[in-house]
Image (cartoon, rainbow, N blue to C red; front, side):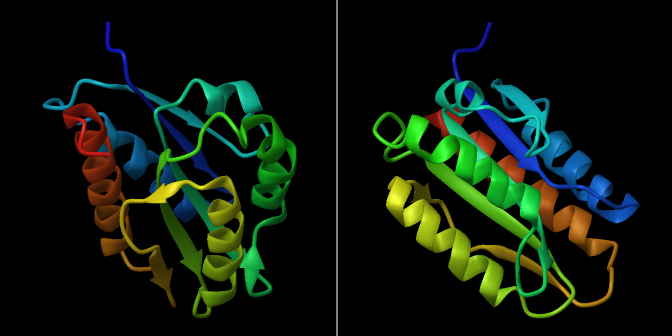
Length: 154
């Protein structure tokens, strides 16, 4: 039994965003990495899930130059219950953006700054028309976060 848990919270309303969520799950579950990986939608995720996690990977769409409403709902429900208990938690973000993703990134940076979560790298913005490489990029991001958590780097 592993002691570390990576929580993936992925808003996946379309077939392509479902591919991204699955790529994140697959990357974090690489056979050489031994951590517990939990994949949930924003609406399923409760504060207890965040409290039980050692790191969090968030995936969201960009809607009207902002994060998806269900992603915002996740933060609204979980913010105060985890605020004092999860400071410093390793965090990564991918955004599926039809436009540039900067509004979504800025909003999530503001929230996670308040939570005092530690970004492991800049937000991965998957911009423009769908590209099959997006799944590879998300898989690599999840694998990097999972491996770093397992190794105690984050």
